[in-house]
Image (cartoon, rainbow over all chains, first blue to last red; front, side, top):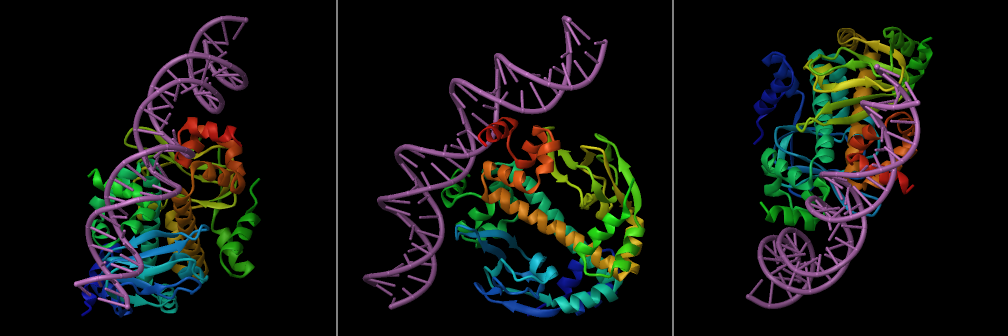
Length: 191
Length: 191
DNA sequence: AAATCCACTTGACAAAAGGCAAGAAATTTA
DNA sequence: TAAATTTCTTGCCTTTTGTCAAGTGGATTT
């Protein structure tokens, strides 16, 4: 059973607006569920989902030139899930978004998001704040990859996002951290 | 002498709008110049500049816990320069933005940008497209750091942004690539 | 011009991480 | 429940990168 109240609360943490405005934004999303291992987005599709993840774990991955699967991001509950290039630029996706556990939440389409973006000042602020938030997260991750050893990055993940380590297989975490399976296995052992 | 036409052209590459709309957006920016080694932003300031860089080279850097200076980004001509956290969230900056050469371009303040964001649909689309563009660039950089060796990252920089290698000292490039000065010196020698 | 400083290079060695392959453990399938 | 498949661990050795320290060359200062 979905609980739109959690989305309202989430919105209130993102922008400073009234509860009724947050409820109005939340009301424009529709309930959504996806099963473990299913795909929210596949390669070459144009993404049409901007998803508030109420519960569950998802990941984005793609194939590199060597044909290896690389997990580029994990999404945990109480976050917005979207593939920025495909969703906002309306390009065929290079990436997949997959549910790693059963997930539920609320989604909105590109068309509806765009209408609200142009017609509702509060939604506009919310949308921009989400982009800013995710952009900052990406920059922070960059910094972490550059300045920390694999062991430190693993420790950091362990502390800040333990759900990932609980539900994602080692190989996904390894490619996300930028190390081989063997190396991650050894890091994990020494802690 | 500043040339607002270059900003208009830049805007037209970012969003699909009419030339007169692009000119109207460009007209809301004001000419700006900054000398080599000067700071556009310093630690603890709240950034108020959203800058179109018409010519020159800039960098963002910060100090890590060990007190080392880390260059986290370079800005080359025909790009927007801003510090997302401080500018959009109105937080005191952790980062510095410094001109590495004499630079010129056009700037707009947060207040003015926000007014236009809410009142001009074309500006709104432009602003969002810039955020999306920079977010994608950050994600791409992440991917590059994770999946490429330092030698490959250097090669890539050499090909895609040669201006940086021409004007930035080795130590800035090294911390940007996530390697030590010694390692970068050796990489450069072997190529 | 001498002294100072800074950017960069280089050598010797150490640490971090990868590659590969074998095997153990866990999970899925038949 | 047995077989097959996938996931994870481990040993051995190689490659990549870091650390530290010395040294070169250029630019700037006095």
